[in-house]
Image (cartoon, rainbow, N blue to C red; front, side):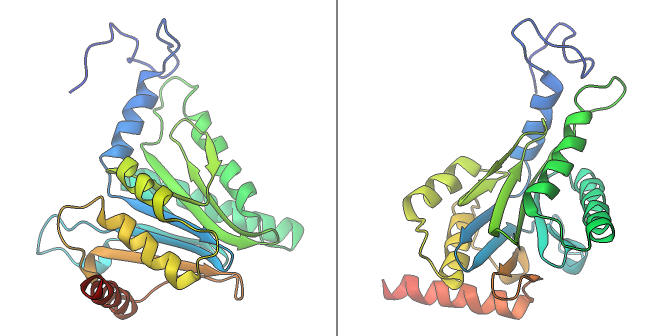
Length: 244
């Protein structure tokens, strides 16, 4: 699958002659092979939308989750290795609760993202470990307003108006660049996120294959939408497509 690198990928602590850490690049490849996740931020809040892929008709759909609640005001969508994501989400939850106990206030979205990425970066500089093969979209509302960040397996992070991670992320990001507007309502942002997600999949999206979460400025609550509401949104998008 990968070309030989004459030993430079045998340990995370070894740089190649051109300054690359190949195990980080392998982790990035794990993210690219993961299901897609879309994030859109507008003045009313933040939307996350992800693809839930069923590998067998015998699987229980409720056992698959690609969006996690971290604290009541913040959550994360994942792309990459699910087991690695659980470790990072558990760590993020602890950091959020520690902040509440120490400072009696919710953690800011950037502070939480930095804590997660500090842990990720630690796993790029010690022998005997490997990088986390997962990227996260961390979204929520804090005292500064709605925020949306993406994390990288290397430990880097960026803030976005709208972005995509996972399979065909370039295609989804190109769609967002063409269609994103800062004055969208939260409902319009949700439809934009779903339409961007549709560019990354080959089959038609079904309610059981889509997970959507919203955090509203008005409530400051991170909420994963029930499947019936997702079904209604998909039907409305399909109706609008037929009319146009």
